[in-house]
Amino acid sequence: MSDNNEKIVFTTEDGEAFEFFVLEETKINGKNYLLVADEIEGEEANALILADVSEEESEEAVYEVVEDEEQLAALSKVFTELMEDLDIEING
Image 1 (cartoon, rainbow, N blue to C red):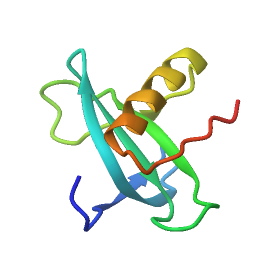
Image 2: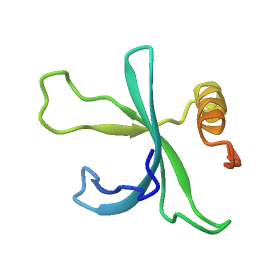
Image 3: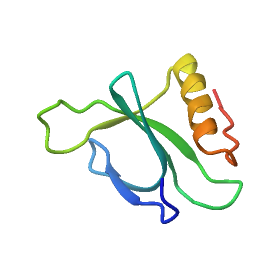
Image 4: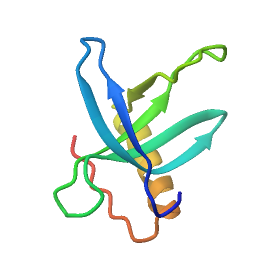
């Protein structure tokens, strides 16, 4: 990812909007994943790993939070390797 971290807005099914910074992205087995956080700096930032669940022909991307603990642990390792200075703590 570039140093100017892209900021994106996610909208829930209820219409509630949340802004996140994209820290890193990767593609594994043909599926896109994003590591996002509500803050770029600070130890209290909340981070999420999101999986792209969009239909191929969809114009808008649809992401879901990765909640499966095994998948989350594996993806955390991948993102940690991609971002050497990142320390991801999994709460679950």
